[in-house]
Length: 548
Image 1 (cartoon, one colour):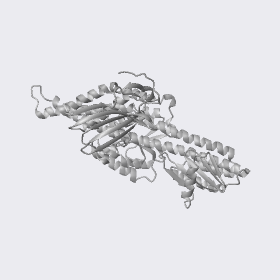
Image 2: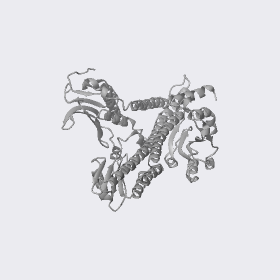
Image 3: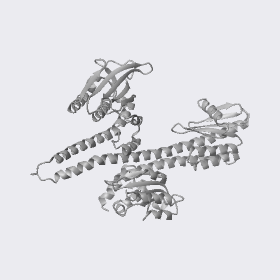
Image 4: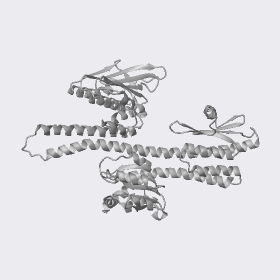
């Protein structure tokens, strides 16, 4: 391998958090299984990767070689192609009783459609397209192992807490039950499983118990006696805000952030046995809470990696489509002799090159805007005149509308309208909504209206509407109009009408400015986007106005 390529790999890995001081000797047994094409293997900087990541790379000649693994590796890195995906999937799903790896990472070098959905059953954690070099793979491995180290750190902290508890409390059989619960909780992969284990421990402590676990998505998981589930669940929900401990006759409810446990048949309140049992209950539920935080982090990592893989798949398809047209038509035109006149078909090809290049530039601009989401918009707010703020953007939109033969109208409900906001963000929002209106309107008009209104709880509000007389949006598509970027892949597969990235960026920008966005549309009768923003940051703004 050329020395320059090795140095580039080391620089890439060091830049993302690895250094030679952090290297781990591969003899310690950490392995990463690799099943890749021989050409891919020859082009990767394997020895540098092995030393820098501190792991032993185990090369596999075929998918059947997985069955000869005597131990479970943390990661399996497999190359997938449009041709081998079916056979590879059948091998991964149908051969193993126990998977020889904890996480599956797929890399793809050969362009083409690959259906990743079935691979999630094979513990897929990452999908990395490497059509133009291995830097995305090195970066993805860096980020993946960083997140795994975070999970491992939390698990080690929980184990250390368990070890300390075992040393200090091993003399008590009841405390021993709590220690055994902490040890067994490492093997619980779901909320119901953890709740059942917690309930068993309560029974061994001599108290009847039940509880509620709240997941990150707001769902509530109940564990305990099923016959009185509705009554106990309602009672615990009512007591969630009453404090850490709530005493009700012979029952005690312990409340933590994500879990509430009700212990029945408690000793008499105020007695010494009651105090000891209450301390044990606190330790037990606190340990369960720690395990719940770890489970939540593990699920967040999985969802984050899946969302990132989905987004890469969307943009890979979307960027490649116009680029293929540009390369194909430009190659044909370049091969044409200077003396030959252009035919009608070739003039159409030149027009298609321009249209696809413009489409590609729009997607690149959307990606740039998306990368700027979640910046500090509060510090960018200032009091401005609305007409001065939007004049340049609306003038550009009016010129585009005139070129398409459309009427354009901009209306302000009051002269000299003022507002306190981020003018850059507002112009980005108006520009994207007007571009969307121009795209789907063949005749008629486009209008932009800026007005104010008073809301009894929110105060003065700014209402901005962008309406068109275009093709409109069906009710079914309206339901998914403002979905997150990670869910846009289904639209691409089913409808082939672009990523919808511009609308997703608009929603994020409006949310950053503390506002809301809504849309009303009828098929064939046009679409109207409405944005509502706080007009002033303070109830009594000063009189200073920044002019543009």
